[in-house]
Amino acid sequence: MIRIAAPDSLSNAAKWEMAMSEVISAGISTGNKFDCVLAASGSYVESLELRTIEAQPQLVEFVIHTQWLASKNPEEKRVKSRTCIERTRLFDLQSVISRFLATSASALSLPVHENWKPSSRSIHQGEP
Image (cartoon, rainbow, N blue to C red; front, top):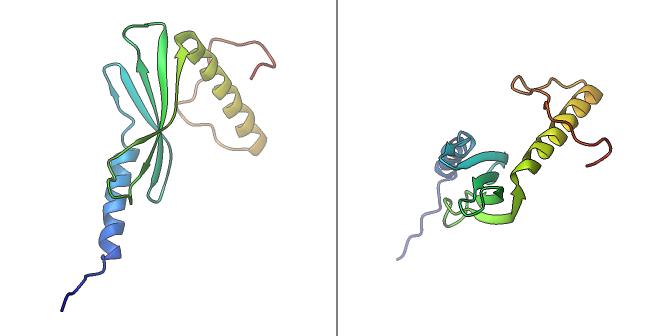
C-alpha cells in the first residue's frame, strides 16, 4: 500500500507568508543595483530592478521581474520586461510619477506618502 500525504495548506501558507515578507522587505540596493517591489499579492510578486551599465555609464538597465512563490522553484524570477534608459530620462520618469501621485492623491483625497517630494526638475507640460 502506498500512502501519499496531502500537502498541509497551513504550512504552505506559512511558507508563502515568510517568503512574501522577505520579498516585500527587499527594497535593496547593492552597489550598482537597486530593487523595489511593485506588486505583491498572495504568491505573486512583481519587482523592478535598476542597474547601471558599466560599459555605457549614460544608460541604466530597467528590468521588471515576476516571481511565483507557489511554483516548483519559488526563488526563480522571470524577466517580464527589460529596456535600457538614458540616465537623464530617469529624472523625467520621476517627475511624471510625482505629478501623477500629486494629481491622483488630490483628486481622490488620498494621503501623499511621507517620503514623497516634488521633483525639482520639470518636464514639458503635456508630455507623458
